[in-house]
Amino acid sequence: MRNLPLPVRIIETTYHGPTNFRGSRVTAKVVSTGKRVTVAWDSELDPTLNHYRAALEMCALMDMVEPSQVPDACAMTGVDGGGYLFVFDRIAEVGQ
Image (cartoon, rainbow, N blue to C red; front, side):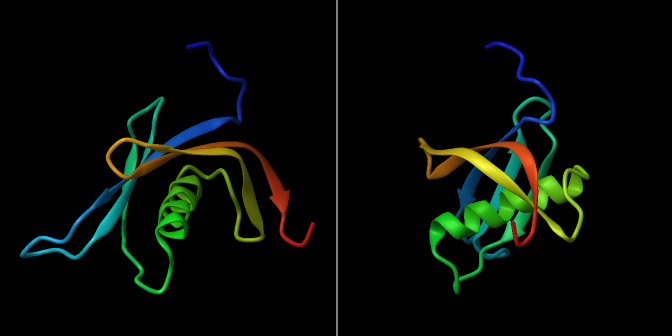
């Protein structure tokens, strides 16, 4: 795989079903570093939006975004196991 210019970030999300101790959740992992975050499943959202929300949380933790900004996902694809790959390549001001 060739190196992508910064600030491109590839984030993989994975669904984890409920256990006896934890509810459903989604993990978001930066493919290049392995850094990850876990976000509780929101039953008010559809599955795709739950995965996107987890990817956005990962972007926020990586300081890719400020509260007034939203990253554009230039690509999103499903992966085996019920997850998605998100490719974020630029930051857009909210309202643009």
